[in-house]
Length: 209
Image 1 (tube, rainbow, N blue to C red):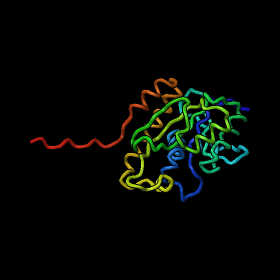
Image 2: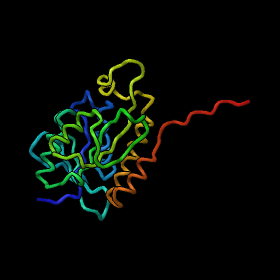
Image 3: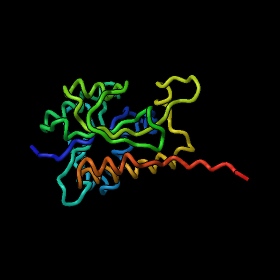
Image 4: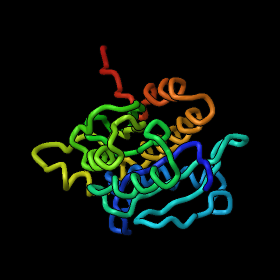
């Protein structure tokens, strides 16, 4: 059995109808990480029993390979796939990074931390239950909250707005850089990079004349 440095799991829902939704932000990071690491030739799919798409990848040259995953169990049951992979490859929570959308951060912001509560995110709740621990790393990608009285469920299952495309792409690029820093230098430098990032457009100052 191969020994991977880390399991990096991006959360989302399977199927083309969910591909560009806010809830699939984690999937989008995995897609971009594969692309930036050389594509399918450098990050081949590996067959692992269970409801999960899994790849072997080496994002940082001369560093150990990592396992990339997109659980196919739908968001609320993400822990089934993550738990199976953790058990199969003997990866403790401290070597698992989960990437997910976060309503409590504005679009354009990211936060990296170790442990904590689930903040009402069912995917994180499921992973905690199946790992039996909350001590894994989380990369929280802001999507903001819906304006007005719209429900959050419909909001996260809607596609990103067209005007958000540039910000989303900036977030994805910086998330990949942050993951590379994590793999090269460890948690604290990665936290400094990711938590200081802000892709939100700067508001114009009012005319004081």
